[in-house]
Image (tube, rainbow, N blue to C red):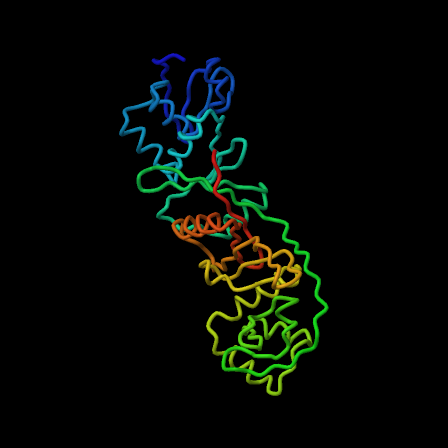
Amino acid sequence: MELNLRGRLLEDFAELNATADIERQGFGFKKGDKIYLHPVEAFYLQMNRKAFFADIEELRSWVEERVGSFPEYYFVYEDLRRRGYRARPQSDVIISKKVFYPISEKNAITLEELLEKLRRSGEVVLAIVDEESEITYYLASKPELKGEQTEALPKIRGILLKDRVITENLEIFRRFFYGSEIGGIVVLSLLESLYLFENGILELDSPEKLFEAIKNSEGFEDRYRVYKDLKERKFVVKTGFKFGSDFRVYRKVESAEDLPHSEFLVLIARSEIAPRDLARAVRLSNSVRKKLLIAYGGEYILFDRVRV
């Protein structure tokens, strides 16, 4: 490519005379004998001494005014180009073999925006740029969540013990993996207790005391909504506290004595998640051979670290 190729800055694009090299490498779009470049493409070509558009300060200022997430967006674009990808800037993402979504580690990930991208594209690669301008890539997708657990649960009687329920029916744990067996009884969480009560399995002398305990349990409504949804998808759902998450999820459990590895860790999010928290959660999930699910607004996003 000509090192002295000169172009000019227009209102929204940079303009170059069309050349075979520029076209072959997939920069911009051609119209007549000109190629029109996205501001990040122009910045990339000048930084790599393949074209010249303006004094560096003028070029930087021109690009910053037109690219909201600059320079993080540029670092991801440059990294993809350096790896041999034919990357094309498009709005706030970069299109290549996959859709890449650049974001700074300092900015929260808005889950509704990410879900909207997933609805359009199926998969999105989050490209998180840290303070040293290094990039970590996470594949986000919307999984088909279907468990395989079938349950013919026995009727059980329980007694409320402050914020949990105890029962002498050991089968509910040993065969169906509800609660924990402790000293000859099974102890059920509030989530499990309400689910079993609503489904006519658990009998209580004073159901109102259960609802009083629930009312005093912070964040219960959000957690129960996700718990119930996963149960209705035929998963076995247990606390994820030891793994720093809300739940751990099994596709199927035939008995507590022959327990398989749980497949997912589930984190319940409000409207956004900090990149640092996501990185921590993905690393922990991978270290214990599980996949991370973020639950938000009745939907789920599966995250996994990927190599690009």
